[in-house]
Image (tube, rainbow, N blue to C red; front, side):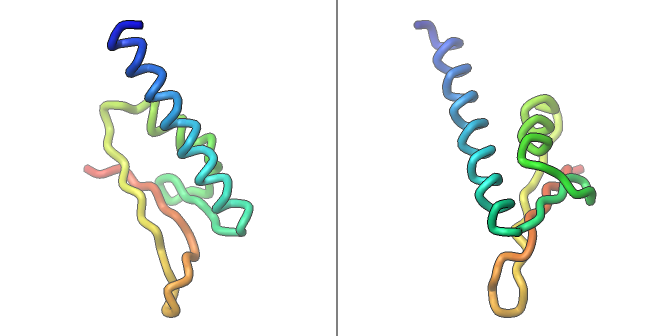
Length: 77
């Protein structure tokens, strides 16, 4: 397998891993937002992979006790 094929497999593995991690958060009742809109793990992963010319930052928002309350993905301008 050539380097391009290996990179594609690695990218697919990373996409799947992120999808599963975000899905776990959603199952725990932690909402995910993409550009200030409620979102799904699929929508986030799709946007991050399709918009490769844009950069998104994940912000893990916690309450005063340190409990994770939401995850926000916003485009870095």
